[in-house]
Image (cartoon, rainbow, N blue to C red; front, side):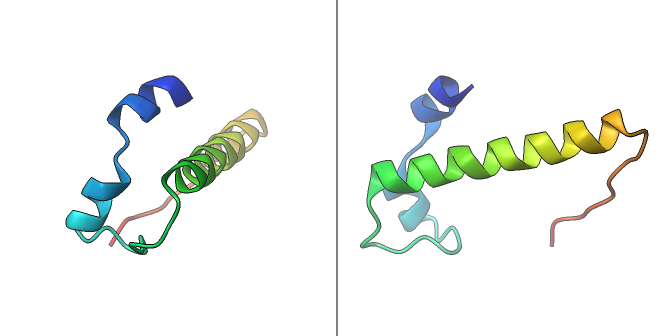
Amino acid sequence: TPEELKERYSLDQMIAEGVYPVMEDWDAEETFQEIVQTVDDVQALFQATAASGNGIIFYVF
């Protein structure tokens, strides 16, 4: 849930660990909201794909 994600979210830690593409001048709350929106969008894509009887193959490099 967004609440669970918020508990684990730290923009400062993302910057310290060099998570791409986080920049030091980003607003922490705005960045969090963008992350939540992206997760929601990806989840909706997977749900719609599964509902139509298809699948998605991806890899992270």
